[in-house]
Image (cartoon, rainbow, N blue to C red; front, side, top):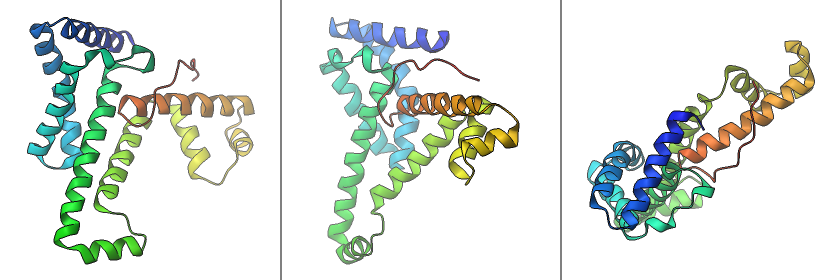
Length: 202
């Protein structure tokens, strides 16, 4: 974790602790910092500002009630909040889908019979693709290029090493560490569980 991100997370964790001790000032600071990035995320998922505000309010209300539920071992405060927000948004999307189903049931049933994605599944899939694209940008150029070539082409790692004239171990290392950093970046965005430190590679 870079120094700036580490300091940011330390601030958030400190405010959480102070919220648990009853500090309204700490909550004001925590709220201001958190809502600045929670709202855009909620708006992208729900495509409705009022619903996004409600979802953020639900998450931050839960923080006031149970700040002790944050576990630093499992990841950053932002990752913890993002996972909660994603869950709240999915609940709202499912509820919205059920309302649509009652109003116009037959097309929804037909979509289910034909194996087509339901509305909330489409939104979630789009959000996950957007998160993946953003997470890929956090990788080094060699890691990003190697992962893209390894997973989106038919070439093996050995073939890539031969084409690029680098040792096979270098390609394997880029794939290994690239996947580790990719999973960690996705977890920061609320998709999946954070991993431990996997070291560094170019």
